[in-house]
Structure formats: C-alpha cells, structure tokens
Image (cartoon, rainbow, N blue to C red):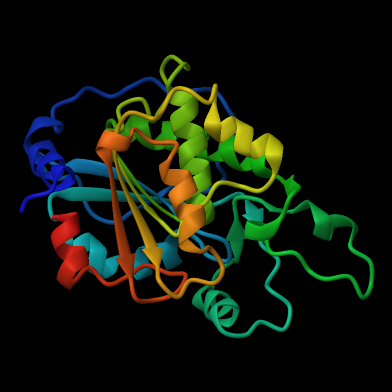
Length: 272
C-alpha cells in the first residue's frame, strides 16, 4: 500500500521544481560555503541537510549515501554547524562511533551542554542530548538560517530537509520561525526526514520548538528511530513528532542504534 508520504515525494519530483527562489534573512554569515552533493539538473527537488553532534557536513554526506541513492531526483545541500564540538570523554559504544566518524575533519555541533561550561573536576560530563541547559543553541539556529539563505540565493528554494539528532531540533526551530517570518529560507519546505530527533530538555529551547502549543507544523514528516538507540530513545522522537501535523506524520523503526539506517528494504520503501 502506497503511503501518503510516498505519494507526496513522488508528486514533489514533478510539481515543486519550478518554484522561484525565496528571499533570505539577515543573520550571522557562514564562514564556509554549504557543501553540494551534485550539480543542479532540471526538475529536481532540493533538500537541506543538517548533521548531528560530533559530525560535519562532509561526514553526514558520507553517511547518507545509501539514502540519497533512493531519493533520486533530489539535490542535497549539507551545512556545517558553527560550533566546534567537544568529544565524549572515554567514549565507548555509540559515543566511540560518533567520535570516529569525524576523524580527519573538525568535530562540530549545533550546541553544547551548558552544564559542561562550569563543570568541576570529578563532575559528570553531560551529553548535549541530555542537557537541561543549552549553550550556543541560538547561535546555531542563526547560523543555520543564514547558511540556508545563502544557499537559497544561488540554488533556488528548498523542498525538504533531512536531519539527524541535534539537526532535527534546529530544523524544527527553523520551521517554527518560517510560520511567521516573511522571506524565511525554509518557507518553501514541504517535507522533512528526521532521524534520531528529540525535543530538547532545556525548557526555554523546548518552548521555542513548541511555539504556542496549539499550532502544529503542517508538512509531511517522517520520523526515524533506532530500536536499540540508548542515546535518544523512541519516546523522545515521538515527542518531537507530536509537534507536527498528525495526519501528515509517518514513523519508521530500524533495528540499529543512534544513526541513519541504510536506504534498503522497508526503509527504502518508506522513503520512496
């Protein structure tokens, strides 16, 4: 049975390509041009990509290779987060995988844990996803908005967003802005794929994502969770999904941990 999300993507390949570029929003200028995954062929959908903590645009591009092959007809633009990220101390398991994924490049994040800014010797290091006090979140959102606006001016409007972990929170914040901010670079977005996403535990940041609490984000959204994800359990991803219009929400569970599943099997069918 063809899902509503699948129908929207198929329709979008033909219907969205001719939209004219949108205006940008003044903000902190990015220091590095966004990474494009391919040239701009005719009749293409444009997808903005926001990586997770301890990654960067190039690493995220590598990790999404299988997924991008499924979404033929799309052009992907990968952003780098503005903050250098602090590696997990004594990393093991998923943490070690995350640290190793960015070898050869600068580790980056959209925010860090405020608790770690004043941590004393012997105190536990707080992972950003578990933090109740974010440090640098506003700067991360401002930077992403500016980088998206820069890409918008040269490449045309965005039709979708693909995000992982931290990037999902920044994406949701930007989409919330786009509801009321004229000329927002994500105003044209019609679908999102959010992998390992969550509602922040920082109350002020969570409030920004929720908006007035009554208005849902009205666009197609696919929320992907790992059954064995101990960093961001499925319940946290479900809480993020509740911020989106229920009739347009789809969910997918993969058997892995905190990461992107391969674009094969059931996940491939969901994407198509």
